[in-house]
Image (cartoon, rainbow, N blue to C red; front, side, top):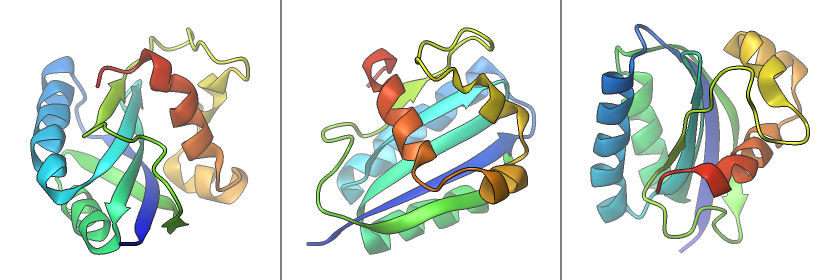
Length: 141
């Protein structure tokens, strides 16, 4: 079975911790039977997420997210086949750093100051994947 990976960025309509907890719990419950793994990073109401798994399941999951009224300004950043998973065994990793307290050497705070549309125009395609891999060590799985 070919593996597929899709990354996107969105803004949450009215972000709060309860909403994020619900989103992550629902994702974990739905993703496992669909063989979806991935990572979600939320900072100041913006989400960057990578989904990986069978292509049809990834597109179906992204379609559900895109029609979710809690999200707006949803922009697909990348989508392509991959040889192996970056987030093996994670039904959905999750990390929410405090704004301005990023723990990566490249200090990614600037990314979350851009709109999703600006990200597509100005940021290299593999950046979302790299960011999420960097935060993986701090994620709750």
